[in-house]
Image (cartoon, rainbow, N blue to C red):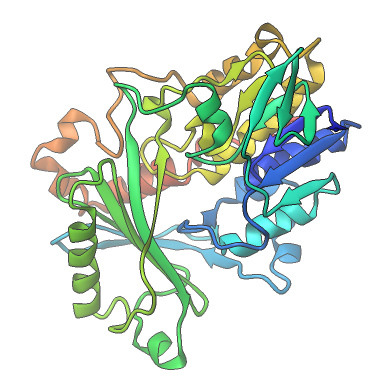
Length: 375
């Protein structure tokens, strides 16, 4: 039996960030993931400068031999009407490929890794967690996304308040012919909101790679919505007429309406396992990174691994992201009640609204400074 100070289940951005933070402070950590890395990860794939700052990554260094698409504009519209394009006057975000980004973060971790290793058993005994009858630790962290086995261990599941977003997307490298036919520009991602305001679709070009997808706060007729959107984008020349492969699906919880516990005795949840995706955009990379940094600080300052000692993590999450399960908050991608009225169509044609509210506030969170946690 191998003994560690902490076992982290999930080697994505949340898990790798936590592992690196803990090991730099002398903790003996094991990170486990059912996938081998690099691996494909269904995700539109963009990160803001705040993420690079929190991770102490120089974008110029990262871009060496990796895809890093500067984003300076956004093209936003409601399906069925013309889009509005806004120039932000500088780089406001970056397009990345998750297979590269996640592998890069994990490669910075020197702690032991068990990759390509599904978690089959988790047993609590004498104040310790035993995983797969091989590894033991007093602290277990769930960082394995929406279906994380640690979250299931806590009895997490869709609650009466929870809103599960279902999404489908595809990412592929375009041929020279496809690249010439694609009118979407690399520095200008396109966001298209469903007319019922229960989701949105996107077209995102990263050099020669193209990512297309659609997410909704319910999976009712998700494929039908996606097929209609793709057909329209093909007809208008925004994307190539021939798309290879199939669209992959994934799911996640939106922060304001997730009902998952964050801590218990000897256990914590971070990232999508905790249901931290931004409520209005569904973006989860920045919340994942920040939750890992906050969790590391609490772990290093905690007197023990009891729920009482770990509770400051939950308090910090609330202070950073706000209260959860509020009836006053809009559900899922839903917008405020006043925006559901016919005025929504007009607002989505407004340069000021699509730039200041949709892009800069909901998607980029420019009003929130980068999180830098000293551990």
